[in-house]
Amino acid sequence: MVFLRNDEQIHYEIACSIVILAGITDYLDGFFARRYHVVSALGKFLDPLVDKIFVLTALIMLVWLHRIAPEIVILLIAREVLVTGIRAIASSEGLVIAAGRSGKIKTVLQMVGVGALILDDIYFGLDTHIVGIVCIGISLYFSIISAIEYISAYLQVRVSHT
Image (cartoon, rainbow, N blue to C red):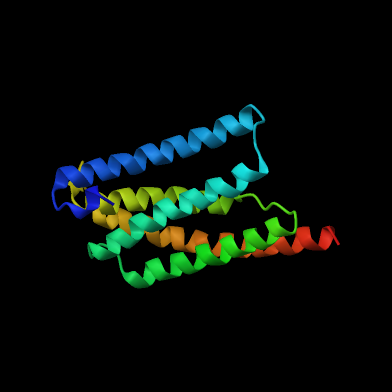
């Protein structure tokens, strides 16, 4: 947020670098947790939650910078609140619903889209604004699909535990 408040391209490049670093470390964390079998219920809950806070904060800042339509961000926030609510209800019932494949695709697309929208310039012949809007648009599709999957998974897990 600090770097996005300063209207200089170098600050946007630093912010984009932070998004890239966050994405890489998030991937590595999950990879090593699965590889060395150190996956925990707490990690399954907190990792997606932290991802949501990080990405949504950046998206809100991008609305402030007039780089993305507020309606898109509102839809993404509504999906995240819905899914987080379902996961919290499941957790209170002793159930864990891990992130599915479409949710992970959504997160990757949002990270790429956010990074590109932060840059909002031409890099390597690509208009990063267009790249960002396309990635966020596709992520919206995966957001809806993964929300449906979370609801379905919760209902299946709940039925099987009764």
